[in-house]
Length: 191
Image (cartoon, rainbow, N blue to C red; front, side, top):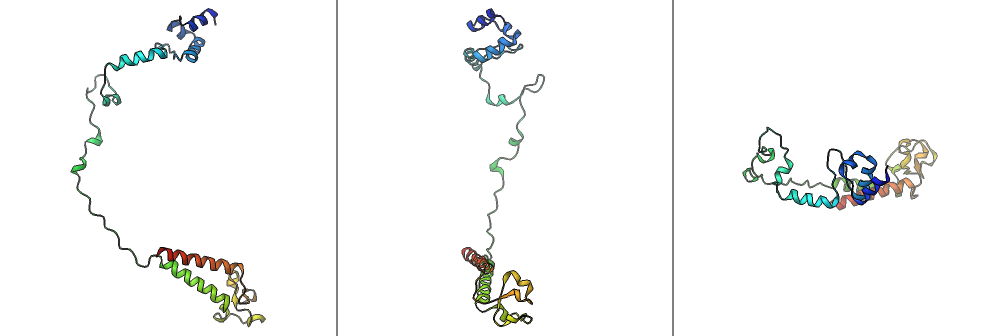
């Protein structure tokens, strides 16, 4: 690059043709002055862009024509939008009134009933023992003292490991009581 051409660019004495022919000078002009150089388009400086915009604004165009592409030899008026050709909002038939469905009276009773039943079952098993109701306690020695059903061993009721002493709280008992209590509270809340 020639130092003389760079000095002329910085002084503003270089023409658009010379900028379009030299890529390095075009890049510098873009970075320093914000001039976009394209060989097919005459470059403009930012200070000149306002004058060009004011000159173009003297011929106002309708706002709708900005979105319409003009094709030579085509119709001069754009066709109406398909959205505007339908019936107008005042022409539509009125909507029927909204009918509220009848509420079911037992809404929330399922959780309430399940929670109440579960909590009663846990407490009966804890303090009285389900071994008094289930007659599967025949094959082990601790049949008379261990009447509480252990919830994790519910499928082994004929073995001694499924039964424990009444009144002793275990983790499965606490979890079952908590889940039943939560169902009971949710059932009460929905009422």
